Image 1 (cartoon, rainbow, N blue to C red):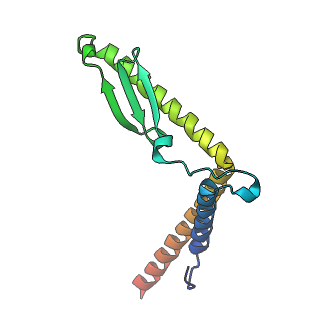
Image 2 (cartoon, rainbow, N blue to C red):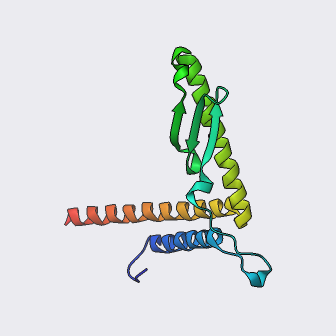
Image 3 (tube, helix red, strand yellow):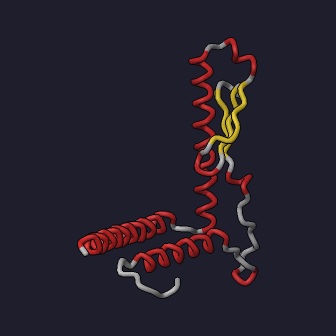
Length: 152
């Protein structure tokens, strides 16, 4: 970032957060090469991050994207006579199965990329807390400056 007045230290916290995110992105997209004795592995595509599940013996199908966001829901028309509570039960089962599938896929892909997501999350939490404290300090400084200007 450009140098300048930064009494709150906010720019340093933001730089650190960007550095951590770059490291995480690099770790996730890093490709092993032949020199490592490993074959190139493609970066996971969006389809690999999709979770799928069914409910009601396949009468309800759900598909979720990354982190469990519902993408599609297909309900067999024959369920229209089953009643809303039965349909709701099957939908819930299908969505939960799809979310579990997505979590398992994400865990497998993360493990394959050798990313320590717990450590990364803890680091980002610390940086976030530092940035928040810096932001509070900056707001306090601006408030004090505004009060001094109002007294003049």
